[in-house]
Image 1 (cartoon, rainbow, N blue to C red):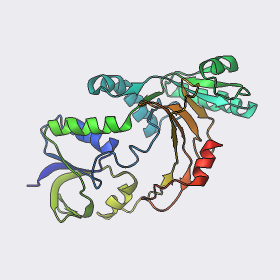
Image 2 (cartoon, helix red, strand yellow):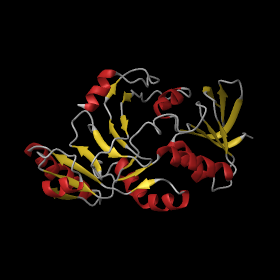
Image 3 (cartoon, helix red, strand yellow):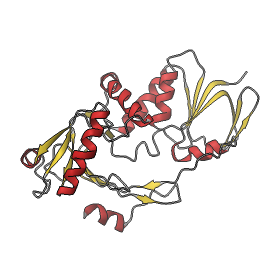
Image 4 (tube, one colour):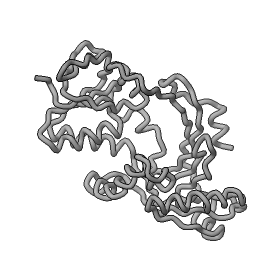
Length: 289
């Protein structure tokens, strides 16, 4: 028999949430994480925004997942005491073309996904967020957009799973996976071996490399780096301020954060090195401008 019923590779918010859910059943579980702690990858290096899915493609897996998650968050926040701000967001139109894009694309899209949105006038926008450019024409209000502490969420999932009997192996990078007739043999970089009936690949940016270990080369992941600036300076905004997206990215946003201060960014830089987490003067200048 295998050591575990399920081995989850990756200790981000996806891996730990799956671990938490499975730990409510009578299963032997292990989570394998290469880094010295959970939430050391993309799960901690993000804006912390809990999306409603107003801009997700209707009928897509993303839209369906976000629809389900909207119903789950209130209970999670209450049960896990997650730092959480229900501040809402506004997508600002700075010219007539952006206003038309909001009216013709984002409002119908949101309604198709069952997300409450409305157009707010320039006066309403500036009253709630005086820092927004006075030349704005108005914006799309998305009251359901919220903010959470990503690390708190991820760590809470892992802690509850451990209390339910799951194991978490930290500093345990996967070196290879052998697929046997009825189980998998996972060899770790520290020389140990784990066997499991099933594997959940939640390895984030490295999910393609994990899949490749059992011969699945059907996809590759190309990282896109985003540089943020965190400031404790007082900024007169009360909501998440979103630009109208471009074909390349959702653009640079301005947002409060749950533990104080404000977040500006990110950039959108396609690259090859998955480990490159450096910041640059050019990136900071792009955000500041």
